Length: 361
Ligand SMILES: Cc1cc2nc3c(=O)[nH]c(=O)nc-3n(C[C@H](O)[C@H](O)[C@H](O)COP(=O)(O)OP(=O)(O)OC[C@H]3O[C@@H](n4cnc5c(N)ncnc54)[C@H](O)[C@@H]3O)c2cc1C
Image 1 (cartoon, rainbow, N blue to C red):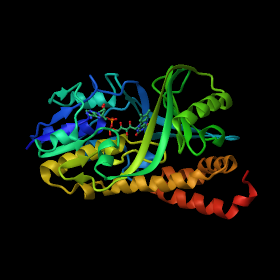
Image 2 (cartoon, protein in one colour; image 1 turned 120 degrees about the vertical axis):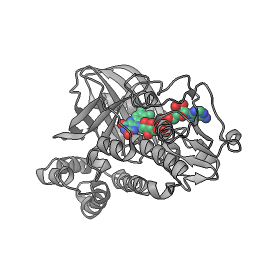
Image 3 (cartoon, rainbow, N blue to C red; image 1 turned 90 degrees about the vertical axis):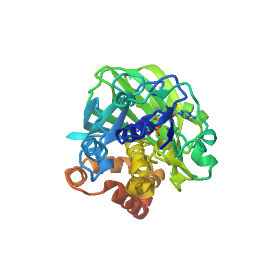
Image 4 (cartoon, rainbow, N blue to C red; image 1 turned 45 degrees about the vertical axis):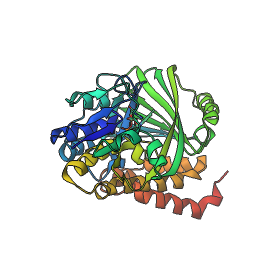
């Protein structure tokens, strides 16, 4: 069987590994000259979002055969609102990973597991490959192909202004800022590589790239953080819904399959799983749409969460931050199977639609 994979990112490599383990050597095309995003950044995976699977790294290992090493565990989450700061401290809230060119990056870990050589410096066009291959896996990290064949529907368009900063950091602490003056209904986060270097990024939905520059400056002005910026990057993150996920002999995986969830903009977990499940659809004939359903449903729950947060004022955000750090809510979220993503959005909508008049700006 002949399989082509366009894109040697996280999803494409996960797909190639699973195919290779099962006797299929795919042709992998990568337009860059090497593996990994051109800038290093620290990515997070939070267990509260991957519930109810328990430890997500263990789940990726046992159910998908992907043994990935994290850089560090997340052991505390610090939430900063306009007038409130709260900390959730607990072992095992999630993981930090390095992404990019580093030898330990997720992409390079995956690449080392593969025997098949990637064809670098080769921008592939799916139209040139469809006739020559039994399957063409679209792992391009964007919606260009899914959109051009009419399978893509936009959900949320988000801009990310990211930076690498130096300062003094707790390597196991994730910081998140939510303040409508600079993040609108989005957020900023700090994810450390180590005790001296971190990724600091501002993530805002429904704005343009030019507006993003304004909010980045506003963020620094208001948050007043004691860090120095070494590098910056700015990019557009589009969350979407892809239907169908198999069109003719094209299979969509990762962000090309709408894998960027619409609330935090995370997508690495979806990319790894969709790559592996697409490979199983190819060599075992498993139903790809069915096996991806639960992960796509989760993204739609995240969309509801995004919508619930879209209209909140700073006072309301501060109430949520205070609420999330109370012992009862912490226990419910972190020590039970309670689905905070699904029911949290309903709760937020209900709470603020009833009592909004009291504290809206
Ligand atoms: C700044 C930033 C921070 C992020 N933070 C997090 C986080 O904290 N947690 C999280 O879970 N997710 C995070 N994400 C999202 C996560 O990185 C993506 O969901 C994941 O990388 C998607 O994997 P992918 O394989 O679909 O695409 P990518 O990893 O982007 O790979 C796509 C590959 O395809 C190649 N390509 C594209 N077109 C062609 C073509 N025509 N021919 C050949 N090659 C092509 C590209 O060069 C690239 O190598 C972040 C993303 C960014 C950019």
